[in-house]
Image 1: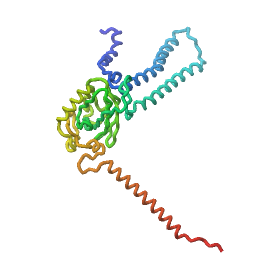
Image 2 (image 1 turned 30 degrees about the horizontal axis):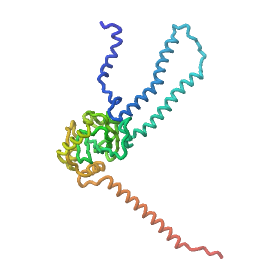
Image 3 (image 1 turned 180 degrees about the vertical axis):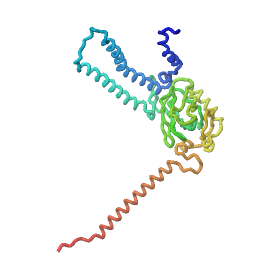
Image 4 (image 1 turned 90 degrees about the vertical axis):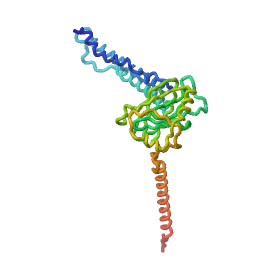
Length: 330
């Protein structure tokens, strides 16, 4: 037989599984993710300033005013206390004001479109430093990374040098996904026909997990990749090695765009010029019209129609004025 005390503690056994959890969100390796993790901690502590006293007071009141405690003061007609009202409403109001101020500040400070101003809390970014640009395409169910400055591309593998600002430009070839590397920065959504951005920096050498955090179909759970933060020398060597791969042409992209699950890592030594823009404007297939071209044509057509309408109005008003006869008074 299991002792009563042991039986009461059995419900705590599942908590042992939490010992294997990865706390990367609160212990990341990138400066943006570190600031976001600190924001989570500060917000939690501020909310605990209300939650903990309330939980303690619940237990205290239940014990103090228990039925067997005859020494507790009995006041059946009590209905108001100014001090309690100020405490009950004033403390949460102050917490909300502080949380609101912190949220407003960090919403702008950690805006994914905002260029980085520092590598970490001790090192600002020198003036004139150009971020490494990486173009990201979410596909079914894999990730493509295009390095326009290096002229290479990969599938399901991302490599960047540490302590170098990185600007991700992201889109999707089919449905909405969410680009997320917990050790680097928060998630940012990718959508077909639209471009989103993320500015971030990795500060420690290592291999990290990246994945889609927005459900996108049957292969969603396998839509993962490895992110390698490396030294500048190792990054240059990796770029040179990748350039020995094949060519990522428009036809090759169309073939890759077909849905696959657990797609292997691929490297491309050359990339067709402007491929990312073609993906963004949904006109990779030869002979298709790009979205930006259609929008420009629509805008031109609307502007021309408005000009014709305004011209017709001016002509009509001129004709009416010319044909109008003055009224003679006898």
